Length: 154
Ligand code: HEM
Image (cartoon, rainbow, N blue to C red; front, side):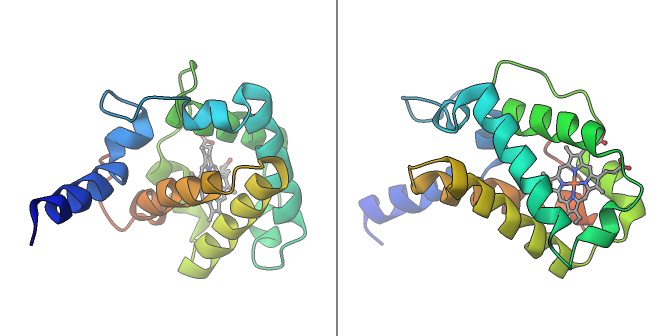
């Protein structure tokens, strides 16, 4: 393996680390993912569109029965913003605790991610953004599904 290849692999691994999600030092220079999604208003709109898509998604709609959608909107917006470089703090529950009572399946998870990516593409012209959001969501899969210790702090 050449040095260039080793460095490439190392960079890809770093991109998928929790530190990248938490927006810690070491991220590439330039606008944050939060800024590229349009800042607070952009993230807020993406979350609103995601929830609207969930309500039309047969795989997910029943899980949202009885859930306070305004609170969900507020918490998910804060989580998404804080995790992509926004200035706010997320003060909601960690991912394992919040999702444990829902009994989610992997298919539920995939359906939810698909709605998020659709909502991103509805709102953001830069097509690279959805790929980066997908990488973050996939990195959170074990925490949301409760299949591993939540090491992200979320
Ligand atoms: C990477 C994927 C996911 C992320 C980042 C995420 C994020 C969040 C956040 C931040 C909250 C708020 C926590 C709180 O109430 O304190 C939440 C709650 C919730 N999530 Fe997710 N979620 C994900 C996947 C899913 C999936 C696949 C479903 C099911 C379709 C789902 C359904 C819900 C529901 C119903 C709540 C509200 C729980 C309640 O109020 O008791 N989430 N999620």
